[in-house]
Length: 424
Image (cartoon, one colour):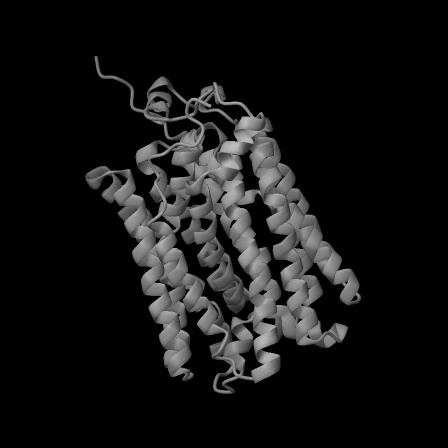
């Protein structure tokens, strides 16, 4: 008798995560393209707009750990529904901005609401995706996110310039999309594969094989001591600051950086503004597949660490070259390639979180991902300070290159084989 084939409900879960990634970056990236219009309408300075960008990142960092932990306690079905409803609402509220103070508060609350989305995504993967498919799952997720981030500048420019649609209306429409996702997610998804009526025994066995979620782990004082004193955790967090520092430049001031060349048409500018994230799609997928292949062939440590090390090392070299050359043709291409190289590491990064996090993947990912917006909080402020004192737009690229180099060496201190809470 032929055994039934495993169902593919986990692929439907992956589909929900892909749409989540698309919506997340649509709402994040669009404000960077709209910034000149918002600044003009509300009478904002470059420094004020930088603080508005940083307010989002600061709130995102502060609320990342508790929201990731809530996913561990209450499940991602409820927590992701709340997150998406919250950020969608505050995208719409952003469209009602009437001044600097209002926008500063709204973007802070936006960041507080969106915090925890990616840790809860990783927790969902840790429960639904077999261990040998996790790098690819993360690669697909970030490819969708970066595709959204890459096409958003072109879409927003087309709406603003070609159709002459006001930035307020665009934000209101973008914000409404998340409500549809939240409705269907809550209705269909279940926190555990065993609870979903569409999952058969064969798929459940495939998912659970090798899954490391220790039920004996607790969230008492010893739990937090292990988490916050682990050298492994510290190295992971310090490494991930680089991701946020560079990423926030790409989604906030990179369009302004390009505009300073006075070389491009509005269409060319919109295409180039999305280039770093758009061309990251291939490294996202390739990095996810490569880390899984190397893990299966050379072991977990080699498969994760060397992908992370070389991704950031090459990214540092490319961004550094862009700062030195600083021409309207070569620099945007080098910056985009440097960004893509850093994104090559994402599959290895988030798979590492799942492997050392076990049952508390949500909390561990929340701790790591809170480091990224700390980098994002600093990035616009440092840029504003450099530009105000020097007026040279190539100089902010040097800190990005330096922090990428630092991240590469942090990877050498990370051990994905050491699960934090085993036996705790």
